[in-house]
Amino acid sequence: MQRHTAQSADAERTSETTTSEPSSTLEDALLQLERAAELVDVDPNVIERLRHPTRVVQVSVPLRRDSGEVEVLSGYRAQHDDVRGPYKGGLRYHPAVTAEECTGLAMWMTWKCAVMDLPFGGAKGGIAVDPKALSAAETERLTRRFAEEIRDVIGPTRDVPAPDMGTDAQTMAWFMDAYSMQEGETIPGVVTGKPPVIGGSEGREEAPGRSVAIVAREAARYYGKSIDGLTVAVQGFGSVGANAARLLDEWGAAVVAVSDVGGAVYDPTGLELSAIPDHETQPEAVTTFEDAPEQRSNAELLELDVDILIPAAIGGVITEANADVIAADIIVEGANGPTTFDADTVLEDRGVPVIPDILANAGGVTVSYFEWLQDINRQSWTEAEIEAKLTTKMQSAWEDVEAVYDPAMMTWRDAAYAVALSRIARAKGARGLWP
Ligand code: GLU
Image (cartoon, rainbow, N blue to C red):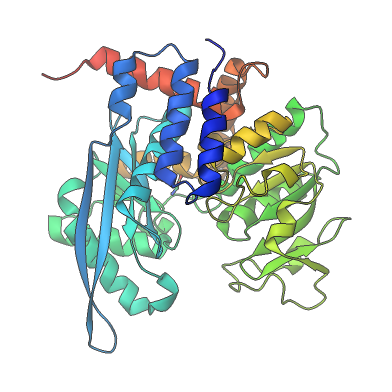
């Protein structure tokens, strides 16, 4: 390990980015890779290979709207690296989906699977569409046609999609059905995050939130904080945020603020979480329920003086513009990429630890792995088994990262990258470059 020397380069980037567009997911993913490459003793040829995705597939997806009109949407699947096993990662339905964004998110999946020591590589895909503007029937038709358009590049031993922003268990069920119909046999292992009745896993839905809570508990322990009365603010009350908040509350923490797109509710003594509707129960209703306590904006939630801040909504919410007013002692990333590269630099200078997404929210892909194992072995594990296995896996990943983490030399993100990159580099070294 050598001390990173990215400081002066960071200063340059900082001044550049104040005058230009905010950095993109892919730019940030590449900057993080470059920074980590300076820290780990990894063959530069391997780093060079990891800068480029294996392939990025773009397809046109014609959708017959309920009105009868046909609209042609763009779909993508970015496959970053598969040296450790089949490509793995979610499918996102969101207006901002692009080939570039999928590529950056696919890179993060490669590191995430490697940090967790799962036998998978990294991928991400999706469709540039606003899912809220589609009826259920339209979403079904769109998903089935998208499955057909990318069928050649996916499969249970090739590339295994899963839910991500704007998609859910039902989307995966349609996707699996479309794929299976075309292949002529039922193939549950083609996607994960399905409903349990067709080969989905118990505990998959709660898994990303559960891992965020486990990692937040470990981080609190590392910094000598007791879980009892630990103050927590959670941005986003969807699957990740709501499950993380509920578990931390159950373990004795005081969840003082939660939010959705409509804004945040705040109670410095701890919220009564059971009274707040999550996204599943009633979308975007966090601030509208009866007896809602004090309200805050989403921006204000991020600035609350709490022990732990969990950004679990969307990417790019902690930026250079607000990183210096974050008052939380620790940030645990629930969303993918909530902290930009430039914000990371500011937080590092201020001594605010950021526990990265590729570790914190990795419970999702970990239980996806359990689901895939159950599917290919025609087994069904109980929820208690899943919870126990997930806890063991998260704790051992935390220990691997903690063993590398040296506060004088690196951030938690650097440490997680170091664990991931050394595993990937060893695999690339053993397999070699063909031909
Ligand atoms: N979309 C989730 C993530 O970003 C899960 C991916 C998966 O289970 O393959 O980690």
